[in-house]
Amino acid sequence: MLAALLVIVGLVGSILPALPGLPMVFGGLLLAAWVGDFQQVGWVTLTLLGVLAVVAMAVDLVASLLGTRRVGASGLAVLGAAIGTVVGLLFGLLGLLLGPFVGALAGELLAGKGMTQAARAGIGAWLGFVVGTLAKLGLAFSMLGVFVLGWLMP
Image (cartoon, rainbow, N blue to C red):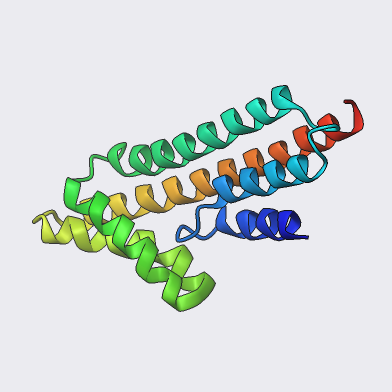
């Protein structure tokens, strides 16, 4: 029961940046394997799951950075996008979707850039957030698939 709860909260955390989603999914799957005394899911499967979790965290970070940097955004825009994402959590789904854009836009304006460049930075930050989130979700569900295959084919 606790393992399933960790996996579910981890899946939600793949979308919400305040929760360590993929490590929670991995923890839930590890707990499920442990409860089964590692009879169904062994160390090879768990190692693959750990690698997928690390890759997912790296992809999320790289997508966010590349999304903002690709459009030539300043360091303040990158910082603004990160702050905007966290603050956006307080405003629900709309805040989560708009937070990175608004934060990068504000950061770029604070850096003395014009509105056109600030808007480009905002769009880049938003695209990076969306791509990173989709990649994390895809990898989270891949982890679930690997676990199920490991369970069915010991």
